[in-house]
Amino acid sequence: MTDSYLILEKEASHLAQQLFGDDLKKRTSFTNRLLDICTRTQGNDFLLIHNPGGWGTTRLENLLQWERSIVEGVNATIERIGYTSLLMQYFRTGNGWREKIRDIKEQIRFFAVKRKILAAELEFVTRHSNSLRVILLGVSQGAAFSNAALQSSNQLERVYSIEVGMPFLRFNSRRVVTEKTLAVSGNGLVPDAVMEWDIKTILKAFGGTFFRWVKYRLQRKPQEFSHCVNVPGHEYNWEYPEVQRQIEDFLDVNFGTKSNAEVIVS
Image 1 (cartoon, helix red, strand yellow):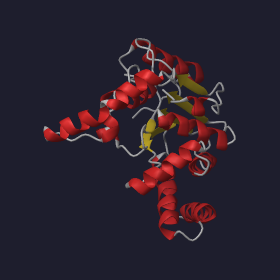
Image 2 (cartoon, helix red, strand yellow):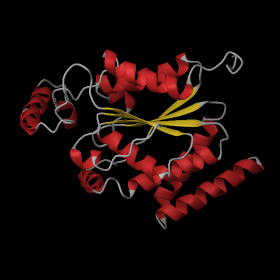
Image 3 (tube, rainbow, N blue to C red):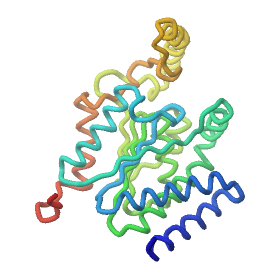
Image 4 (tube, rainbow, N blue to C red):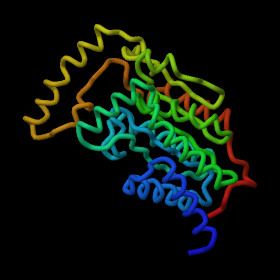
């Protein structure tokens, strides 16, 4: 290992100890993630961090089609305008009901603890890269988490946030939107019942969730319970013109097309 890597490892380990104290498992996991990001982002213009909706645990290949289309659309747009990027996911909740209960408590407090961990990660990564820009891409509860982390990071100069369908008034009342934040609050086709706090429609949608979940299991095509929720308007497919336009305009205004002189020829 080089001296610079050993120094980086020491700094990452020290930060992990500050955040997690005597929890060796969490310290090791956090340190390894920081080192992995710093290594893999070398030579890239962007780090795109996807914060999944729901419990924040769903891997890219298992996402609902529309959420996956947003991630793929943003990543493809960054590459289309001439930049290189690394796509990673941030999973804020572990498996099991205990972890989910803890996450509910965190959501009520606008992710008071978890947001500081992601914010520390963002500060570390950008400090160890002179030019890397970071985009947080959050969907639904993941959008709220992105905004909370951005606030805790003291508005780092090279960190941006695309927030799609942030739910419920309790989140929106604490949301901070700056020129580096894109808040997508409608798909341009059907009003989002979650965003508009349409209680009657939301309850009706959730009322049928259990039956859809059971139906898929009986068909031997089991789905995650959260994937069986079908709230009208709370779907932001990349193919919807208004969704795509807002995101592409945001990327264009903030970054533009990379000039020919800057494009790295492979």
